[in-house]
Length: 452
Image (cartoon, rainbow, N blue to C red; front, side, top):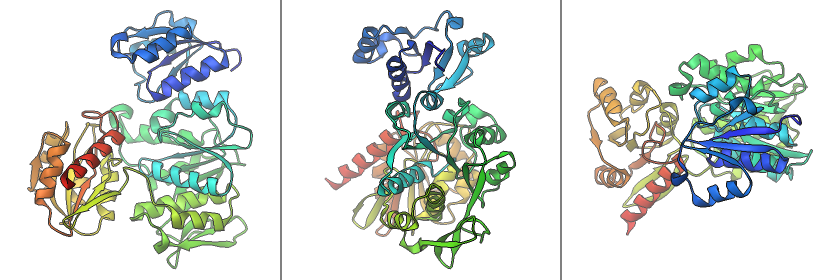
């Protein structure tokens, strides 16, 4: 990497800005591109870039593509942009911020991917490592750019990294010592086109591993487990349904690990977990396997599992008003995630759903209602598509609202004591919000308005 001096950073979101800053510290010559014009950008950011002698292409395609040794593409930027495709034909290397961090920095990487459960599992693993007094940073798709930490990491640092398919797509040398694949269900097909392509991108997480490394994978998820054929590292399966000869599983209501010496290590009872739902049991199994095979004591793993209360925007209890519970699951950005949320809630549900269309299908989502969802309150670009699917499958109690405030008011009016108003959109947020976090916070503020 030392011979690469000229970089173009594409996309000036959080990871793009962090990548540009890292490259400047590295001593590289940096140019940046964003589809926004200079007038649409934050003034402070533009002024900072100019003071650092960064060439800015704002609202206009970059020129002299063959002058760059590498282009660093932010995760949300599609790789089929014409100038990126042209750069490829010119032999310019295309990488992402995760790959850049790995090349420039130090430390040991724990990489976690999957359609659902990434944030919860990454956060949980981070807590286990911190409780084990490891030098730990929790980074990646969780909201903290990897480059913001990688350059200050030491040889004994641990970077617990949530990896999206968009990030993995632009990796080449990225080599985690332990990685995990939680599940694969249809998602981001607007970008990856087919489920097979999506799975291939997810499989890049273990591509550079060796026999000294570990790959933790969901034994119960066929789409994930079939990928082990191409894996060179030690495969550590986890299962909540089956007893395993090696790996992490549930035995007599307890999380246990059978190690390479066939010793059975008891972790804790499944009923001791605070986080609800079978999907969160799977997340706990994965986190236990990751941590144990990194050498962390079972007692520390158990203590953390018993204390972990989950993450914001994932089945997050917000309030109870007049006997009606409000739960924020804005992290439910695809149908499978929302199905898991519906399954985890006890009692009847008024469900708020809808958002940006990622070319998802909603039949299984509607079928998961099972008489449990009393009413469906829709908003956003996918509202007509979800309504059409629901009505075709015989579900009729549907209400369309223009914004989150109206959705919350309508849901409250439909609910009875003992019911749960659940925001679990089954869609991304980008049609109305900048992120699922912003959407979740807006939901919570709308709930607070009801309490006034």
